[in-house]
Every structure is written in C-alpha cells, then in structure tokens.
Image (cartoon, rainbow, N blue to C red):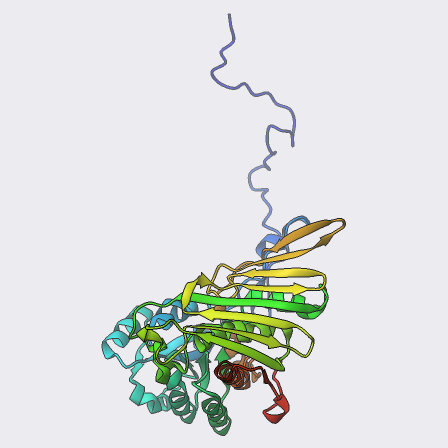
Length: 415
C-alpha cells in the first residue's frame, strides 16, 4: 500500500537539530539577560549592542526630558513654515516644547492652540505680556524678515531668549541692533540655520575640514524654485529685504561657509530679472555669485525664483568629490563620495539615517539655555551673512568684484 504523503512525517533527531530548539522543562525558563533588559545609568535607559560585527549598531536611545523640565517656546507667526514644519518638529524634540503662540490672526491662533494643547495665545501687539508667562523661556520668530527686529526687541525686553528664522533681518544695520538688544537684555540669540544641524550637511563639513580628501578647490551650490503668483510677502522688499538671495540663496552662501569653515575674501555677482514681470519690480528673480576663500577654494553659487526646484551641493577636492543631494531641502538628503579605488573610480554612499533638522536646531538652542552654552549659529553668524549679501548686491549693481575686509567689521565666528 502506498504511503500517505499528504502530511509531513517527522522523526526525532536529538536536541538542537534542524527539527527545532529543545525547550526547557516547565518552570525552568531563565529571565532575560542584561543585554535584553538594558540598564539605567544617570536617569537614562541604556542597551549594549546586540548586533554582530557586520551590521552597524543601533543609535543611542532617545532620552527626553520630562515635559515640565523642557524649555518652553512661544512660536511667533503661524504661517506655512510654522504649521508645516516647526510645530510638528516639537513632537521629535527632547529638550523643548511649545507653550505659547503669537499671531495676528486670533481665529487661526485659537485653532492651532487647540490642535497642540497650547493654552497661552497672544497678538503681535501683546508680546510684552510674555514677561508674565514663566513657562515661556524662549521665542521662535517665524515671521517675515522685516518684522524680526521689532519682535526680537519686544521678546528681549520680556526677558526671553530668541531663536530667529533666517535671514535674521532685512539688512546688516538691523542685525547689529538685534545683537545689541539681546546683549543688553542678557538673553541668548540664535539664527535658525537648520542645515548646520542636519546630519548629512554636518558630515560633509567634517569630511571637507578633516583633510581626508585633500583641499577643497571648487564648490557648486544651487538653490532654485519656481515662484507663484504676485502678492506674496517674499516679493515685497519691505518685508523680505530682497528676493531669491536672502530667501533661498542664503542657504548656498551660509552652506559653503559652513563647509569650508572660513569666510570669503572676494566675490562677484550678477542679477537677471525677466522683463515685464511685475513680480520682480522690487526684488530679484535670479542671482549668481562667485566667492573666493583664503584657502584658494572658489564657490560658484546660483539661486533663482524662476527655475525648477534644485537644492544641491557639490564639492570638488584634491582626492575626491562630495555630492550632497537635496542639501538645502527639508528632507531627502543623500551623500555620495567619489574617489580613487586602486586603478578604478569608486562612488560610496553614506547612509546616516535622517533626523528632523528643525528638531535638531530647536533642541540645540534649548540645550544652550539649559546649560549656559553659546549657540553654534549666534547672531554674529547672521550678521556676517548680511554683510556678504550687501556686498553681493553691490557687486551686481556696480558690475565689479568686491573685496571683503573682515578686519574692518568683526572677527569671523566659527564654533
């Protein structure tokens, strides 16, 4: 009679064989080891690496402060950036939390406050009342550039530390006054150069400044997008201070400075505006500028409100090339390194793991407040960019190279 093969037939092959593990007798199960349980040290849960040598270890576990111990922020301005990126980023912050809103639209402020469980709501003309709210230790200015100086002064007088969106003002004169206002009030000032806190940008800067790939010789930085209808505040010089340059070109300017860890000594620029387009009667649409640095590196930067979105950075060094895709975007960064590998060309990609760059910058400022540190991107960093942007506009206006004499202004800031 033929064997029934509709079900598998098992045979005993002894403990630990391919037939499966040998289970311990009932009641003999040992508790997990410390490798699985973890341990507590200095108020933080720690786990040792459980992976083999071939795989990268897990990052350290998050160790958020209890909510009541986090730095309380008042968000000033409830536009697209505040609602689309900054307020959601607080969900990933470990040292900060939103505790107040400041807006010129009471209905919008009440709606957003209900969404985030925030009780304190103020109008722009009520910023002096922030002094009465002990939960608010800092403000984050997310309003148009031309409003920053006045709002910072009100926040500083209320005794609150200030995190300002970039650019920090409309011009260098306003930037200097903002620095002075914070110094007089003994509060900290930081400019929200988010890319300087983003992990791929920081690794690229480390590679450049380490000398592992030799000296940087040529940098290409571009930040472009297609601007929509007229009537936007970015096209109003009084609110924006300029067009594509201070809005998105500033990422190229500040980015190459951060990559090299030095400031330019000469620059040359050109502006092009489309004829007959009423959107560009006050501000520029397209600007290209070249920066020459003391090390001999040259950066070619371009920014435009009239070209398809591109936010990339390329650094050509003596022994390789860095290609940082989406360098200035909110997300989607990729870092590729081209270099010689024996007699061949190799292109490596670093996978660092994305982190919310807004959360990183907010937590950095909170850490500075909690521990008495100086911000990585203080007001002086923003002032330097304003001085450089004014030189760029001068070069384009006069169609000539402009030399930068830092000794006549102030010492460069690098931390």
